[in-house]
Length: 161
Image 1 (tube, rainbow, N blue to C red):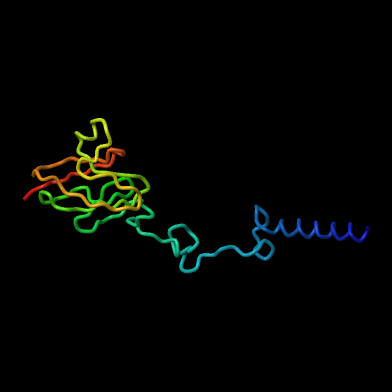
Image 2 (tube, rainbow, N blue to C red; image 1 turned 90 degrees about the vertical axis):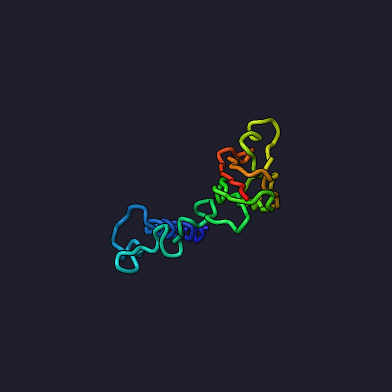
């Protein structure tokens, strides 16, 4: 029994001594407190966020939450915004909705958005991760549009021959 107690006491002392050397405000001497992360070249610290492997571009859709461009004749829903926000199309032309967002979206005129129902008078609901085709209005003009469900999403569609 004595050997067991002595072994436990020794293990506890070693554990406490080991934890004391793990940082947490102890000595600044690297020989006793462990090595610190040093800048790798000319003052550059590759462990800082946004550097080295963590570097990113501000137009990265995973950073900004929004894609920056859309394929021709495509309106992308991304980051709770339309991409692009200014669209020019021909009357009755076929376009694609590409929902890269986490919520269902559609394209509604302001009048439809204010009416009861679910809007979508320009283009129907599209679930997250899905695409749908639709036809642009046949009447030339400028249409201010929103997503019926998320009316902070705005764009302008100009239909002309």
